[in-house]
Every structure is written in structure tokens, then in C-alpha cells.
Amino acid sequence: MATRKVCKHRFGSATASLAAAGAVLLFAAQQRKCESLSAQLRACTSLIERAQRQGALDRQHRLHLDLLYKAMDDPALAAVLDTYEEELGPELRRQYLFANALYINALHSHRVGYISLVELHGHLRVMCQNKFFRGYWEATRPHRASLPDVSQEAQSGRMVDELIRELDDAETEEWWVVGELPVI
Image 1 (spheres, one colour):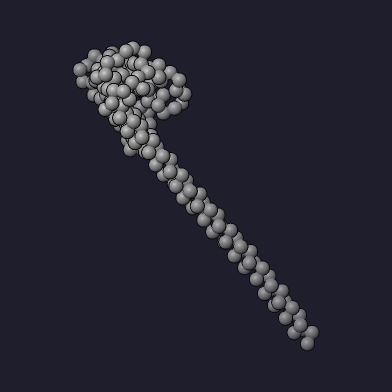
Image 2 (tube, one colour):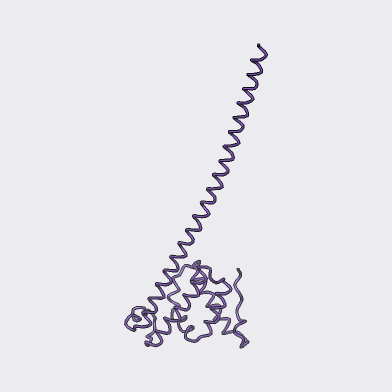
């Protein structure tokens, strides 16, 4: 009978050891699953936050354009936005407001990922062909002076300044090939 007790004890210990090992493996598998779910949750949260930021940018852009359109339609409201150093007539002020709307629209399109940096460069190169846009750009130079150098708007402004310099210095009439493409 002593032999039977030893065997039962050995099988009992082995069973307990197998059960403990199984529990450890199950715990490890559950922990990996939890870590995977946590990573998926962080990714989803990041996507939601990006979508919310883009939605906020879109709403702000729409509001900005609505305000510009109101100012273009009403000279009394346009006077509120007249912060230029020189006196502008109502027609030129309206043209500058429209130039601002075009510029901000291109910049916004890049910010939210609708167009690449290279495409933004192309849009800005086209705008720089227009004498009214160039007048607006020069008149608003003091407005850009306080932008942080690392901001997208400051970087875009430097791109416009460089495009204007390159277009003025170009030895070709083929303006659409002027300017170094930005490095992506």
C-alpha cells in the first residue's frame, strides 16, 4: 500500500505542477492579449484625436473664410480688417482680402493633408504670378514678423518670399519651372 500512496502523491504533484504551468501560460497569454488590446485602444484614441483636430481646423478655416467673405461684401466690415501701413481704397482692400482667402485656403489644404508640400509650393508659385497677390504679400509683411519661425505659416511665408525672389531673378519666361521644390 505504501507504493500506491507514493504514486498517488507523485501524480498529484505532477498534476498540480501542470496546472500551475498551465495557469502561468494562460496568464501570459491573457497579458499579451491585454497589451495588444491596449495598443489598439491607443491607436484608435490617436485616430479620434487627429480627426477631432482636423475637424476643429476645418471649422476654424470655414469661420475664417466666412468672415473674409463678409468683409469683402461690406466695406464697413472690411475697414475693421484694414491693418495695412498704407491707405487702401475699397477695391484694393477687397482684392487683398481675397488674396488672403486664397493663401489661407492653400495653407489649410496642406495643414490637413489635402495637398502635399510640393503641391503647396505649386499653388503658391501660381499665386506669386499675380500683381495683386504680390501687393497683398508685401503689405502684410509686418503681420508675419511675429510668427514663430517653426510655425507652418512662417515656413510657408518663407517659401512665398523665396518664390518671389526666384521668379524676379529668373532668366526664363517659363515661370512654372522656377523655384526649388521643397524637400519632403
